[in-house]
Amino acid sequence: ACALSAGLLALTLAACAPKVEVFSYQYDSKLDEVFIKKDVDFSVYEAVIVDQIEVWYPTEAEPSPENRARAEANLERARSLFREAINDALDDRYRVVESAGPGVLRLTAEFVDLRSVPAGGAVPAELERFEFRTEPGHVTMVARLLDARSGETLARAADLGKRASVGGDGKVDWDAVRYDFDYWAEVFAEWMDRVHPEI
Image: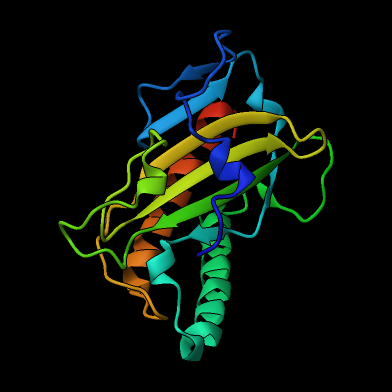
């Protein structure tokens, strides 16, 4: 399995937050956990860079040698589908760009993949320190929005995928993946519309 990355570790959300309340919890969100940095004017951001997604899965779910190439191809397909979902949801109201500049957000997303864990199975111990929800048979999205030029984190979010599916060793339920990607993309687009009431 790929290691829990620095980005994922930074998203323990409230678990290790400093005493100073820099982020405020959004109680009305459609996602499980959303923290927004206070006093940020998001209306100045009209474009977004969509970083390549990363996926974490339990060590025991590591693809077999004969399926490693298929797993890599599946990751590339998932990256393409996620970017496509974001682009379609934004629907030309906001630009998806490749370079940082004024008014550009950077969206980074990682996915905790427990599709290989059977229903009723144990959540891997290395996830116990995190406060976001995980569940066997599901994927959890963990994401950040940053100012693309400064790298400053402006928002953090996590959400348990809605569609249960099985996976592992190169097997993917693409219908479930698309459903979750489309849901998360639509939530992001709706939020962008709320912070840009003039559009």
